[in-house]
Amino acid sequence: GCFVVHFDSYGERTEVALQDWNIVGRSDLTYEEALLIAQESACTKEGNLTNASFYNENTKTWWIGLDAEKPGCAPACVVSEDTRTAEINWRCTGAIPD
Image (cartoon, rainbow, N blue to C red; front, side, top):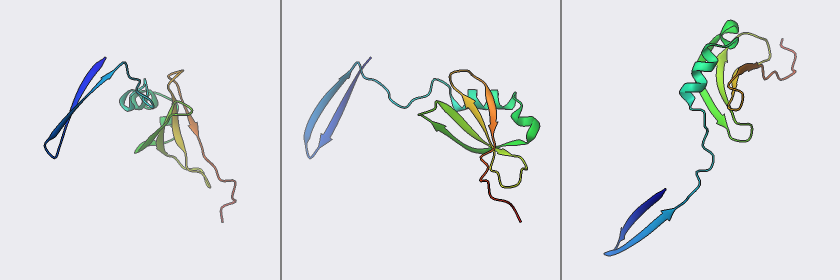
């Protein structure tokens, strides 16, 4: 695509034309789509999804918080952009709870 940007600074106008650019770090899977996949997965059999979420560009996965009980763990429902599937990552510390 093509995009033209105008900058005005101290009375001087600059025009920059951007052509054939690449958007880096964008997911092909939106948060809303990932949330739908998570809601329909086994994740919700273990607990409720929370509002906490982030996208990991390296693994191409959405991490959505999961309110599930497992001592020493902070679970997340992980949705893969590539496979469009979800699974629980328990994120356990290995520490033995008191």
